[in-house]
Length: 197
Image 1 (spheres, rainbow, N blue to C red):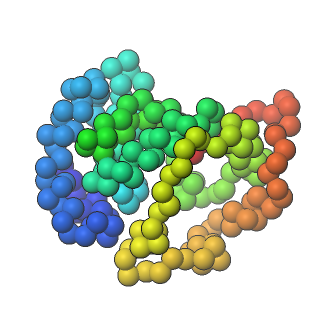
Image 2: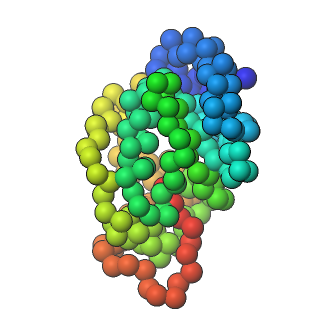
């Protein structure tokens, strides 16, 4: 079920010992599917801390299931997402802290920013950031990601914004897209861009 691409990606984060965790994951997924009434879909090959699957709830709503060996990280993510009261953040549908599982609503169309080929209009970015600021920060405190876990691989040092922009030369840098402070809400009458985090 779990191909070499996924195993390699998670091994860069957790080491080769993650393979034993992956080998034990199918019965965990079967249990979550049964308890939460899910129809499991395909593997989403994104992220570095979780196995991510597209799925549907018993009601037929599209969702995303994330399961990670870093249970605390998934639980912190669930708490942070649940703390926002805005449609700009996916709703938390279920959490199982024992197994490090998080079920969230799917964001449509769900295209990752680095796969779009272009960045969204700056107005859409302002709308997203203003919507998050308007909702206020989630309650509670969340641990910072340790420096050792911020890199895409353990062999690479963290990249600067300029290095990231150079790597994504087909897209403008975020600080170019959002060049002014995002303190004002979007203009009335503008259509929503469906941007979400």
